[in-house]
Length: 276
View 1 (cartoon, rainbow, N blue to C red):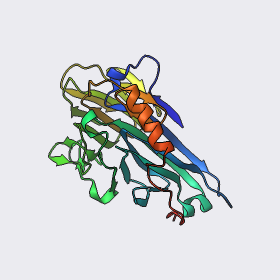
View 2 (cartoon, rainbow, N blue to C red):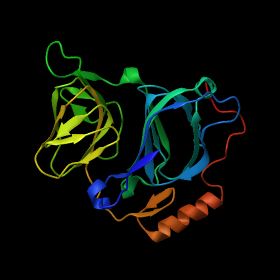
View 3 (cartoon, rainbow, N blue to C red):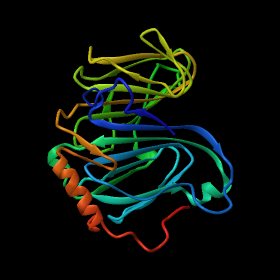
């Protein structure tokens, strides 16, 4: 797993409303005869976790009663808000047979007014996300719209602040422009292939951070490429971030810790989660 946000030289103001970007490059896992791969029960408060599956599958469940499995092209959008416990593991059938695993997880900050809302969950399947062809006739390049809008398509994700999240596949030589307001913070993650941005050639695992200038992002695929385009309006609110809790004041963080220790984030289910 590679943590690309936060990183040295990127202030919170420069990446807001995003708090974290963890990228798991493509990796071939061997079959697992026993046990599990993943992260057991842990708390969150004050933000959202967004998991994009490119290859492989992940099983999720939480103390708000949500559970499910995401596979290639699916998105799990969990709103921790006032507090939740959840766990994430490789889906059982995938773990037993092994195979390619390729994923991305974001943490998205919530505005102050929404941090203590009830938790929520959006299971977004690949067939729910609109696909926009790009590059002209005969070109197989596509933009899949998960959040925000591109061309005439709007993504199914419900967000608390303006966010654009696009899953882009480009054939070699295809140019792409994505409208983004200049005051939004914008990024491009290269998940496969090679792309050129402002004369710089970027390889898989690279994250391009755009200056807050102009009204669009421009890039060109040097070879067949897979990209994630991410942009959002910064919150411009105080942030206190301690482990799995992201609030606006130290007092709110202490309250989050107290509530977690007092068992106010829900009860861990006793039954087995869906891991198929």
